[in-house]
Length: 221
Picture 1 (cartoon, rainbow, N blue to C red):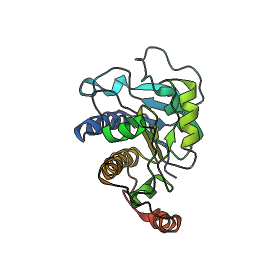
Picture 2 (spheres, one colour):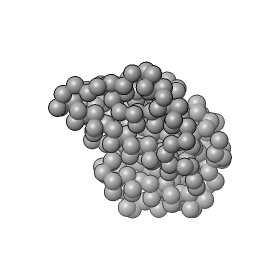
Picture 3 (tube, rainbow, N blue to C red):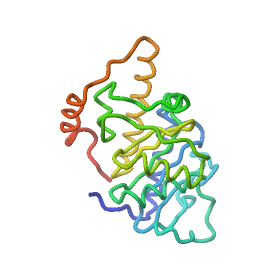
């Protein structure tokens, strides 16, 4: 299990760089997405309503993981901070949370569709599907509860009428999953337009899940 990050300028800049990468790769638009990391006994999260290009390391917001009040004198955190905090509290192995509104993920979420085992890469998210968290108002306790419940045995999920959230043992891992999830969502949405996608069987997916133990981006800092 990877240790938490430290609250350093370099780590804060890495969060900003990841936000910029999301937009550069087309998996987010404007400042609608948000990213957090576990830093010791704190969560560092992007501020609300600040363009990524204008964001500086000192703008990231510290929120205690134990739920106690955040230090005063900081910027306002992303409105989605409650579910970021809830995920980090519920999943000790997670050190980074990436939330965005990728077009194809969001389109499936608008239709309230999960992603079934239409492609072996579904296994990259921990099981035989990428599930859908029930709808609730953004920033609400209910949304946090819905997402944490949906992520119980998964590393990512879609969010009904909203977008997607991915978790990772490291920030690069969480961002990698978001890119892969949007690619998967685009493929699934396209397959629905041209026919009926074939769904891999449970035994086929079991083989893939076993093979995924050593697959993909290696965690690094």
